[in-house]
Image 1 (cartoon, rainbow, N blue to C red):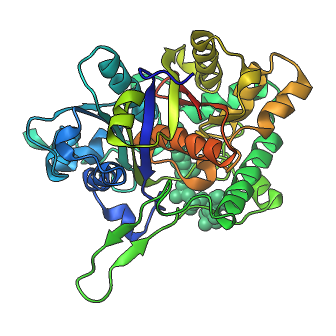
Image 2 (cartoon, rainbow, N blue to C red; image 1 turned 45 degrees about the horizontal axis):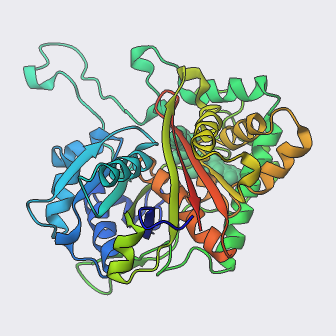
Length: 405
Ligand SMILES: CC(C)(COP(=O)(O)OP(=O)(O)OC[C@H]1O[C@@H](n2cnc3c(N)ncnc32)[C@H](O)[C@@H]1OP(=O)(O)O)[C@@H](O)C(=O)NCCC(=O)NCCS
């Protein structure tokens, strides 16, 4: 499959993902977006004016609101793209930066664009508390501050915290707390091994974040800040969060800041520019289900993508399923295995082989792009093959992309 009309990923980069309380966590998400937008074109010698469309995902609007709105437009201008560039800010929760990729692909297919950029950026630690009602004055009574990071759910509109849904559904699928903790430990260990093997490195998936200081040398961040050394005993002692029966701070990802960007064009266009593609985008699909199915939706979306591509899960050499919690890869691989215990174990072994969001971090709007590029770079290291990346988000929506190297 090497047609000139194939859509190919030609450049893909992300910042390291921050911890909650570090210097990087003070950088506005728009500025993180600017960094990856400049870097992703620089690496392949594409000029800003050659990019037709920039789709930009971000899903904590309260943080963006510190700079008002249209983060895509602001970042596009700040990054030096021409004023004529068409951009779109979108929120499909954690799916956002694969939705942006899919929209770019559709634009190329429709003949509306030749070179498209998909961006995801988020700074969760910088999310302010909201003080509703102050504009009209607080005649009498307490002032309420709302933390829209709390429970990361949609509880004010009556939906469950998704740690509750995911934990309950995991148990219904026979995925116990112990299995989720074991997956969390595996994520930390595989991420440490990937770093030791030089896999997450500057110039490949990662770019450095440089933070100038008033005095002295700048702070330079070159690695994800959240990976930690842990044990199964320590994980087992953590209390569940947000009313979940199984989800804890250990088998959930941390609160992170970070950005990712991917540049796509046709193979013919890449050839014209003398660019060696990173991966071919075989297909890219979206899905949604009832909100409670948040842990299952990556599996359903992968099934849809495989059906679209005429492939089977057995054709996939690698799988990335975002670790919104450990429950997601465990429940989703179980569904994909179709009730075969041996196949379930085999699918787990090729899933998130360099660890996942539990260790790496999960700046929600940027993570979908991260899993797609992690997949592309690992397929390349292995000399090629097929892989699928899928993510859940926002009341059981899903995105999946199948790549071939
Ligand atoms: C779970 C959550 C509330 C924890 O926030 P926090 O309290 O600031 O996180 P911390 O890193 O301080 O961890 C809390 C405790 O767990 C411990 N802990 C966390 N991970 C651990 C691990 N792998 N092993 C052992 N202990 C761990 C910490 O040491 C800390 O212990 P302490 O209270 O004794 O200091 C927050 O990370 C969260 O909301 N995560 C989910 C994010 C999410 O839902 N993202 C979207 C998914 S789509």
